[in-house]
Structure formats: structure tokens, C-alpha cells
Length: 499
Image 1 (cartoon, helix red, strand yellow):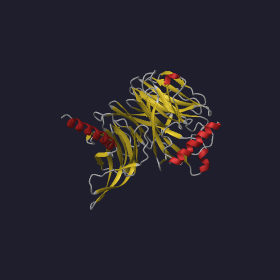
Image 2 (cartoon, one colour):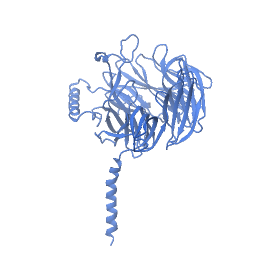
Image 3 (tube, rainbow, N blue to C red):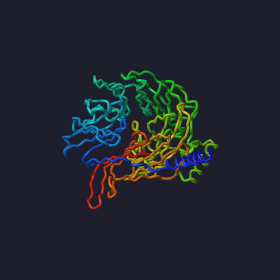
Image 4 (tube, rainbow, N blue to C red):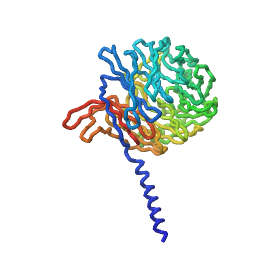
């Protein structure tokens, strides 16, 4: 008499076990869409995700001669409903450069026609109220990175005098601008800058090289720009530490996670993770050959051939033949540790013979700027909080080339522990969901949907995709939407995509 409930319970359990994997493979949804009556030729626009699950949309409109301009800021909630909108009275020649969001504020920096003029904006997420101030920064002619710590600004940019990178501290109250001790050698470069708000300090990671070997250095500053401590991280044996991202946390817990090379410092041969305070990297090196999926962008036979040749090279002592230029993403913190994503790229030149010349000139050394940077694939690696590699996965990036060396894909951890990599491709979103080491060779795409069934998105100019909150991303772009029997309209569209 008790068999039937037990059987029903067992069947329900089996059904759930079957259903969960099926649900995990369902296509992403597009629950909300917003259209703004804006055209690409009329505005400059940025979409910024805020920590309270809302979006900040900035756009600038100006007259034909750019003698008058209005700077608009609008906040939308998670359902893309307007919360508030406001404007800021900035000079018409100001153009957006970068932003940094922390707590209840977003900080934005703009550049003027005079390359020494920079305007900084602090915007309240709650009210839209803005503070802004212009500074003349004589030392810089371009800003690469921008962070804020306790209301003080830290900038990395190009030194006007010698073209090298420079780290500056700016006190917005006093207007005092101070160069901070950072780079020394000709081959030195910045690889990361982290505002660690819990520790009230700023960490800057520097790669130092003499052309043959490379090491890393971390400099920690307080909010006033005072140097707190230097950390020198030496390489192990024949491995040179090329670049790294630094994790938040106190000194005993901070990790450096990055890439290493061997003979040619332009190329990475693998990844490493180490405690920042360890001074010497003793372990946690992971060569490309050891990773499960790094080479999965290749066809199976090509991957097998590449692995076989690499093993033969290593046995004969010729060194690695797997050489990749890798563009690192910022570390993503997860409940179990960290995710490091990277994009493998190679510069393209109109004259292939010039591809061996330096892309970062120093002194009178000849060089040739790349015509573009083509991607082969992107990778993601999951580490625990001690720096042990948990999993790795990869996504092919066929046909993606960017003129500037900037990120082409977006990476977002999902609430169930999986990770999604995605990028916009005209009216589609190409994505891959990663589940630990299990590699999926299927190319999955999502077509962006218009408001109505009788409409079609014909084109999507300047498409973008950003990580938002939870399992949702925000896709956007200037679209031409055709309505059956009613012609075509233009709009700047934002679509919420939930995985």
C-alpha cells in the first residue's frame, strides 16, 4: 500500500534530473526592450551598468558646428523604465573618455580640444545630481586608465614628453596633481590598477623587462598617493612573468593571476597564480599544453597535430612552439574564487613583412602600427581563492578583428556557477555557455527581437554588449527597424538578455 507514493516520488525525481539539463540548454530570453529616438550621426552615447541592477545611459547632442552641446544622463531600472534624467553644463568640446563606478556614484572623465584639458564628473545614482570640474593636466596627452579611491583620482596615461606611460594622483579638492613613482625601465608597462576600497589602498601592477627576462612589481598607495609598499615578484627558472591582474583582500590573501613567457617576451606560454606577498612564484604554473580546452578552437586533427609537435619540441629542448599574444580581462570575483578571461590575438599589417616589428616604439627603434587585431579565440580560467586552477574553457572567435586593441567579448558568471561568453555581431548575439571543463563546440546565436512580430531589425550599427546583473546582459546599438506596411524607423535600442 506504500509502493505507489514511493514510485511517484521516484518518477518525479527522475523527471527532475532529466528536466534540469534540458532547462540549462534553453535559449536566452529577451524580456525587456527599450528604444530611444536617437541616430548614430547625431549623438555620442555610452551605456554603463550600475551596482543596483540599473543602467546609466549618457548621451551628448550638439549642433552642426559643435559650438553648443547638451550632456544627458538617464537612469533606467532593471525593467528599462526611466528613474530620472538630468543634464550637465559641460563645455561643448568635451568628449567622453572613461568612467569608474563605485558605491552611489559614477565618475566620468572627458577630454577637450586642448589635449591638456580634462573635465571630471561625479554623478549620484540616487538623484542624478552632478559635480564637475575642469583641470589642466600638463603631463598627460591621453588617459588609459582611471580609478577613484576615497574621492581621489588616479590616472594612467601617456606622458606628453617621452610617450611613456605615467601614473598620476589628482586631488580634486585642491587641484594638486602629483606624478607617482612607478615605471623605470624602457620595457616597463602597467598591467593592472585596482582600487581596493575595503583595504583603502590602490594597487598598481607593473611588468618590468630588460628584453630578455620579465618580472612583476606591485606598488600600493593610500588615497593621498603615498607609497605604502613595493612588492617584487620574481620569475621561476626560465619563466618570465609577463602581466597579471591583482585580487582584492589583505596583503596575506592577495593573488596575482596572469601569464608567463619563456624566450620571446611578446608571447605567452601559459598562466600562473601566486600570492602577492610570496615574492617568488614557486608553483601554480599552467602551460597551454596542460590546459584542457585552450587549443579547442582548432579542428580536432589540427589540435592533435599541434599537441604532438609541441611535445616533440619540448623533448628535444627547443622550447615552446605554442606562442600567443593574450589580452587579459579584469578579474571577475566569484563565490569560489576568481575567473580570468583572455583573448588571443595577432596584429595584422598591410605588409606582412612588417609584422615582426615592434608595436610599442621606444626611442628610435623602427616600428609599424597594426592595421587591426584579429582574434583566434577567447579563454576563461577558474581559480580558487588559493590560486589553484579549477577549470578552463574556450570560445572560438572566427572573423573578429578590432582596429584598437580592446575587448571584443563580454564574460559573465551565472548564478548556477556556469559562465557565459558573448559578443555582438550585427543583429545577433553570439554566445557560449561554459560549464567547468566541458567544452561545447556548437556556435550558438541569438537574434535580437523588435517590439512587434511584424517588425524586423535590418541593421544594428555600433553594436555593444555589457555585463549587467545576475544572469542578465544588456545589448545595444543604433538600429534600423522595418515595420510591414509602415516603412523604417531608426532608434538606439537596449535589450535585456537573460541566460
